[in-house]
Image 1 (tube, helix red, strand yellow):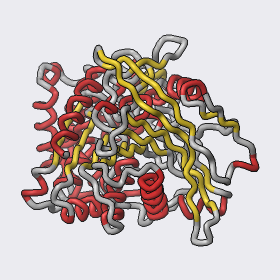
Image 2 (tube, one colour):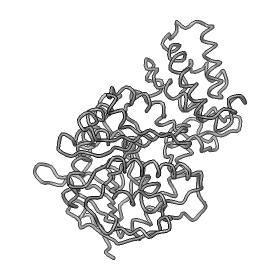
Image 3 (cartoon, one colour):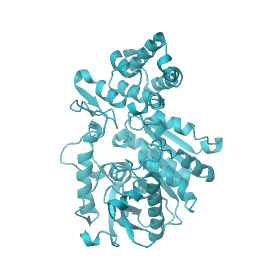
Image 4 (cartoon, rainbow, N blue to C red):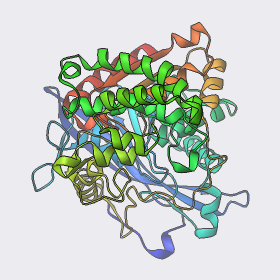
Length: 477
């Protein structure tokens, strides 16, 4: 086995890739593959290396260059591909409980019976600033830490990958989770103009239009996100049995259909009225919000009918002195985060996954992949210096353009009921406003899962997700 030990002098020089021949037990068969890891350099016009992009490439053996290749990205921005890599898509996955909760110690990687590798070769990519991917220096980072720079650099990575591994003749797919969905939607539009087209784009708990997601006191003239997150509040309260018994007896999809219709019509109209809303109508809206969220009247009145994410997370189970997660409201933590409930640092759904995924990755990348580095694997650090374009950035237009120009490109949309970071109703709204013609609308596959943002950590959702993706890829070929 070839080891790679990085020194400071080598950090921004060309690296040799490390390849291993591996196999796993996959559905009563042996799945053999070659895995290659390393960093591809991004260069400026003077051919100076400006950044190194870490990737892990799985190719089923014996190799077949006509097999599809899927490029997978997580989000953030500032999140490496570890979650999709070791949570759902790769040949190994972190062993969690069947619900996706914190596992028993010691943490363990197991063969993944739901890996996509039997259907498509896989490339897991860490953008600049996360994982082992780095810019040359802090000044150079500015080139990559923005929407346009991120899409341009990841597009260049894909171009270089296709050259170095000779995959130009392969069917191509993009998969992105959260901001990764924003990224791959932009890539689909940008790379079409450069001659690189895709059979399919896979959006997992996607963020496409931040106008539908930004929610807070800084957006007082912006009520749309409150409308779009409401059904996710209902789903979460239903899961924790905080609703009226008559609603708990309902099937969740049926209940959510009712809430969606009320949110679009009565709730939206009430918020449009602002302070002109009559007292009688105001009280009726309060009653309905309490009914659909399980929150107390004083909580709803204190926020003037506009329920902030952190208020919901903090108050839903307050009598039990517990909070629910932001990324996945199925997760419950002790209410030690009063001032930061619903944020990254106070999210019990993150606290349950970071330790097992981080530990397993360090062991896996060194012992299984043979890629050894003293660098810290930047895991979900976020990018504080990220430069947003407008504050309401939108990549749905790039996706719409790509689908309009490429009549064969298919689109998969997967969402979780218990996700407050990228609520499923926000995705519904965004896609329904992309103004796609009927033909392109038929290219869309849509699935909802009874889990949260990373719905694949729930074993039932992971199994359903796998079946849906196998069907999607086969139809897109």
